[in-house]
Amino acid sequence: MNYHFQAHRQVRKNLLDILQNTSHEDLLLIPDGFNNNIYWNIAHTVATQQLLHYYLSGNPFRIDKYWIETYKKGTLPNLNVQKSEVEDLEFLLTETSKILMKDYDSDFFSDYTPYTTSFGMDLKSIQDAIIFNNMHESLHYGYVMAQKRAILGEKY
Image (cartoon, rainbow, N blue to C red; front, side, top):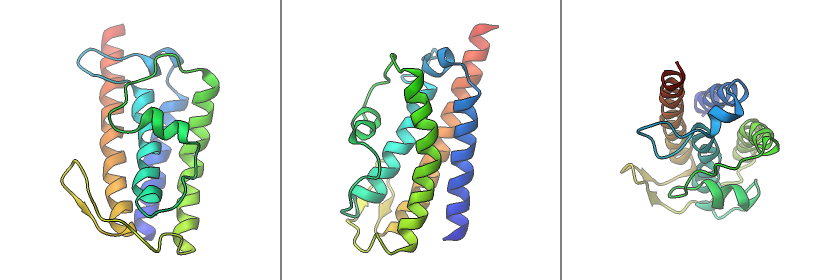
């Protein structure tokens, strides 16, 4: 699983870089042709990771439920995000990845409720969930990059 954790850290590092190097205004802008924004996509990855790993294994979330309820699948982007919340998300991107690795190493995920994702993947174990989550976060990283390009095109 070391490779999968390494991949997770790298996707999170890439998302963090965009979060830290994109203006607050651009993070919240919904580009033409999209139904959400860069900020929502990044926060959504944190919320989904908690659901896939902790909820489905019957464990408590490692983050405040606010993040889950506000950024889970089916939610709409919040256009009134304060800079302090962006800073909180920066912290969560890194810390939830570290905590996941520690929890995995300590056999925190002994039970797992099988789940079929909307992507059509059957998750039967925490290992399946970790691998799928990397794919999910990479998909949203792709959306973020496309949104950033769309915003740059709209501005120039």
